[in-house]
Each structure stands twice: as C-alpha cells, then as structure tokens.
Length: 335
View 1 (cartoon, rainbow, N blue to C red):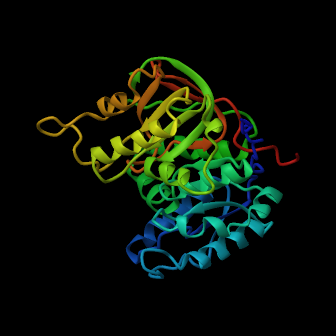
View 2: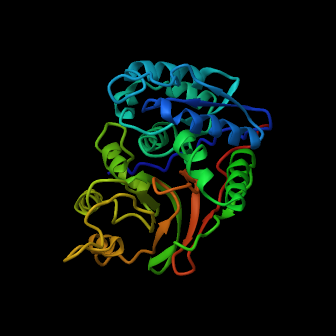
C-alpha cells in the first residue's frame, strides 16, 4: 500500500505594515444590526498597521437564503481576491453554512502562485482543511471579523485586547515561531502527556464533513498530528457521535494529542441525571488511547480566539497546560 506523504507546507507571505487586508463574505450574510461590529473590526485591523477594504458582496442586508450570495458568486469573488496581487490577506466577515457549496470552484492555482493568509473559523474551517489538503496552505483558524474582532474582542479588558492584537500581528508579519500561546485560567488537563505534531482541526462537525468529501485529508496526514476542535450548538450526543466517526475512520488511532476549545450552547452537558461533562465524553470515546488532552482552550465560538494555524508543528504539554507554535505560520516576504 502506498503511503501518502505529508504535504510540503505552503506558508503565506508575511504581511508588512500598510498591506491590504480584505474582509469578505465567504459564507453568511451581513445583517444590518451588525454593521457597527464590522466597522469596529476594520478599526482593529487598522491598529495592527494594515489597510482594510470590504469585498463587494459584504453589503448589509444582501443575502441568498442563508448565504451572502449564491455559492458560485462567493467563489467568483473569493477567486478574484486570491488573484489580486494587492490583496495580502483575507478575513471572513462571519461563518455560516455555504462553503460546502463552492469547494470545487476555488482557484487553487492562484493559491499556490501567491499564497495569502485566510482567517476565520466556524464554516471557514472547511476552507482551511480543504486548501491544506489540496495545496498544503497554512490556514488561520482565527477570529472572524464581525463577531470576533468587532464584537468579542470588545468585551475583554484593554490589556487582553492589546495582547490579542499583538499576537495576531506577530503571527501575520513575523517569520519566526510564536512559541507558547498565552494560556488562560480556563485551560484544563484532561489527560496528561506531551506531544509534538502538525496542528489539524477546526469545528468538529466541519472536520467530519471535510473528511466526507473528495478533498479529504489522507489518513496518513493525521499520523502524529495534534487534533484541535471545538463545537457550538446541538447536543452532547452529537459531539459524541462526531468523535465516534473520527474513531471509526481511524483518525483517533493516529493522532498524538488533542486540544479542545471552550464549548458553546451544547445541550446535555453537566445537566441533571446522567449528563456527562465534556471531559468525560471525550475520554469515553478515546478509551485506552493514551494521548494528552488539553481542554477549554480559548478558540472557537465561545469568545475571542487564540489563533490555531492549520498545518504547522506544535508542542503540547497537557499537564503543564502549554501549547506552543514551533514553526512560523508565514514565510519571509523576501523568499
């Protein structure tokens, strides 16, 4: 049997002060009530030293069903941004339920010719996973513009907001490893141990959906990987079921560690009766797989996101509650 080699990482070019970052509707629409949050997101990006522009589909009130536009139109605009040499990074305005509709329409040749940071989580997890599978692109599972930079970041202390701005700016502009991400008091050791491996993951249901497409990551790419995931909505039984899919597919037998984000709005956790806690649920599915598990890390739908660059090598020490980025997520602009 031929083993699929790990992909050569395709790191986006590092950003420089004054570079253009475009906020785009890569999935869901912009509701008029969130226009102030979007404007605040542009202010945050400006403080990081970037020029900011909206893509044309990002117009308050524009929508097609649950999407900003039909999937083909979103793909057309996304491809135009990928081909535009002035555009140096793309951040999704919000998540949604649309990326599955245009996975086969993305200009992957434009990505390999001029790789750019693509930022977002939720539905954007699919982009990161599929583009990593197709091109080796390092995707930035990081905050969305409107609900993240423009809203969630405004609910934390000024010191925390400054820390996040500096972290994102350094990650996007520096060709040196970040090292340890700033740990928070919510981080928990669910199973002790250490691991090093490529960081792969996203929203749990999107990981499962990505693996059901023709663009699925080969199972061998999970060998030694550190799987990160978070989930929002639904029920504890859904989380258990998604993890069971990863078990049956063989992914859980291959990974070297797991990092779990803070859950949000999941029913059936820690309720009355026999409801499990999230650690109990995770360890139940893992069984005797003795891998480190670090839980309640700040990424995903629960609030401001620590960036989780898909594809780069990380170091995990669950007992010490540390997660370190061991490689840069971007390449030197002169290379």
